[in-house]
Image 1 (cartoon, rainbow, N blue to C red):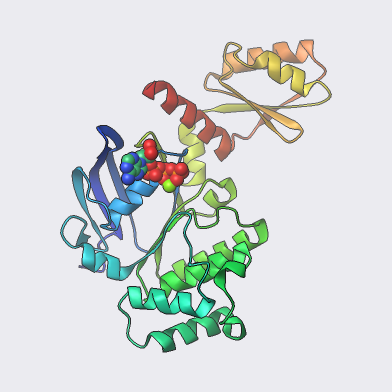
Image 2 (image 1 turned 45 degrees about the horizontal axis):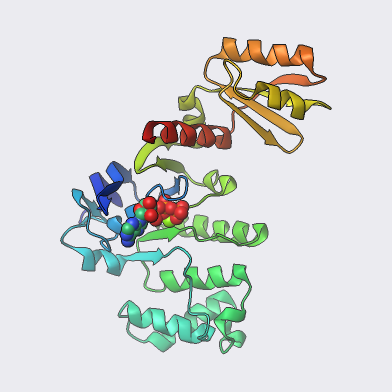
Length: 309
Ligand SMILES: Nc1ncnc2c1ncn2[C@@H]1O[C@H](COP(=O)(O)OP(=O)(O)OP(=O)(O)O)[C@@H](O)[C@H]1O
Ligand SMILES: [Mg+2]
């Protein structure tokens, strides 16, 4: 392993379940120290990809390295250096906080498990609550504890699979502050999420749909690549105008955002004509808008859906 090798470098990664390709020829390179967001609709292959990257699941095609180790033949080396927070599981709810940490420390084959657990409790400020049953912690604390557990063995790469699902905004923000601190200290992070605000906190985003990566880059790059134009409608009849614009020529997407409606299309002239027509028929104000990451993702999702069908 060289210090220059990317944290993750996989090519042509493919996985077939029950005769169906769920991950299709994926190429992915992640550099050291990057925080990369892994986004895509349910069932698009995020978890499957993560599991192949860390050597937990054997791909049906493709190859690559994780932290410089071969994902096909050096899974044990990879597991030792990766912290993996699996989706929907964070800790054993019926064990105490301390027992959870000790359990994980043993899992990673660490020495001095009690000492390591004690230090982790100290860092978390949970020492006095160490005998508390983990299941009684708030969602935010559970995730903090789970994150602490998966970095106890000082991994070089964190694979976080929807780590903040069901966690409130304040706890999610704190969780992300911690992710950034870890990245600054040299960790690489690949994190799957369905939250747009979290996507925006990543250095780079990879968007997968139906097993294929359909967009990647920074937020501005992804918005730029989409070549979408957006108009924002507001006013008393914005809802009625939205209904009339749905399916109109030049209009590819109509989505309400609070009291605004985003009308999106890839042909600016046709879109403008449709929106101006709606402006004549309804009591609405029309402004050119910024295309958001969410606008782009909704578009990518429906395009991929159309291709798949
Ligand atoms: N062990 C398995 N056996 C059969 N099919 C599977 C298995 N694991 C996943 N799949 C299927 O593979 C596809 C991709 O699943 P995956 O869990 O990777 O998606 P995901 O992007 O993580 O979705 P979500 O956002 O819901 O977590 C889905 O159609 C899923 O049903
Ligand atoms: Mg998943």
